[in-house]
Image (tube, rainbow, N blue to C red; front, top):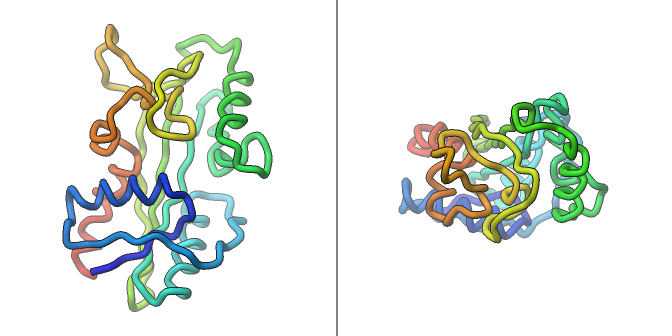
Length: 197
C-alpha cells in the first residue's frame, strides 16, 4: 500500500522510509510533489494537519505529515514551530544553527536542556484525521559535531548516553538515529493507526 509523505524535504522522505521499512515493510512511503500549503499554524499539530490535508486532497492517497523542531527550555520552548525559519524565511539550516548557538553562547551546560519534538498527522483515505507526538529529550552542545543528520542534529546531545562517550545526533549512524529519534517515537504511536488503513 502507498502513503504519501507531505514534505518537499528529501531528508525527511528518506528518514521516514527508513523508519517505516523497519516496522511496516508493506507500506510504501512516497514523496509529495504537489502544492505546499502555507504553514500558518502556531503549533506543530496545526501545521502537520495543514500539510497532511493538502497532500491527501492533491493525491487522493492516505497522507502523513510531520511538523517538528527543537524546543529549548531556556528560550521558553523556542525555536519550536519556527525551527526551520529561526534565522529568516530562507530555511537556511546553517544560519539557523549559528543563530541558536549564538543566543546560547553564555548559557552553562545545566541550563541547555532541549527536546526534539515531532508531531505526525495522518489523514486516512476516508478523510479521518489522527495526530501523534514523539519527544526526544536532551541538551545542546556548545559547538557542532558530526556530519550526519541535518538541521540541528550536530548540536543535539540526547539523554541516556554514557557521560564519558556522549555524542551529538550528527555523530550517530542512520540506524542509531532512526531507532531513537523524535520521529521514530511519534511513528511508534502511529503504528496502530496505520494498521487500520
